[in-house]
Amino acid sequence: MQKKISINTEFLIYDSIEELNKEDKDLLLLAKKATDNAYAPYSNFYVGAAVLMENGIIVTGNNQENAAYPSGLCAERVAVYHASSQYPDLKIKTIAVTARTNGKTLTGPVSPCGSCRQSLSEYEFKFKSAIRIILAGQEGEVYISESVSNLLPLTFTSSSL
Ligand code: THU
Image (tube, rainbow, N blue to C red; front, side, top):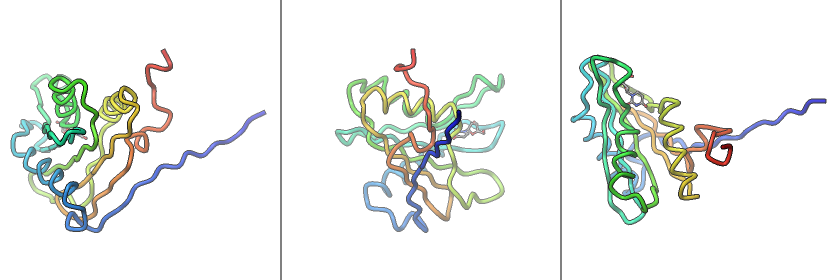
């Protein structure tokens, strides 16, 4: 006996950053600004993330690379761990992520790696509250999802332990 399920994930796609509401656009612009402090001498791929907490405080982060490559950390985790370390009791409302690189222009949204999806999911589970996620490149479409779970179906959480 077998059954098949299909898991639906949803994103709203905007033609450009100009179509976003002010709160989302401002957050994305802070994520863009955060790319300036990325330390990415090995990949030259500069990622920025901005985390909006429930009380309006915004914490940013960027990727930090290392000569021992696996020791580096992605922008999303730098931002969200910084946010949680400073404001452990504040719900995370939204995270915006963007990137730029040397050479080619990124015309579509940057998509968080699996480890970052897992790390962000932890805080959705902790606060029992969805985290909106805004994904953009240097230009072109912006993807918005109402929950990180749309990026990570069948998430492993503490409820499995
Ligand atoms: N990177 C991020 O910071 N976030 C992502 O979502 C994807 C990848 C970083 C890791 C590394 O410093 C560089 O981008 C190239 O993979």
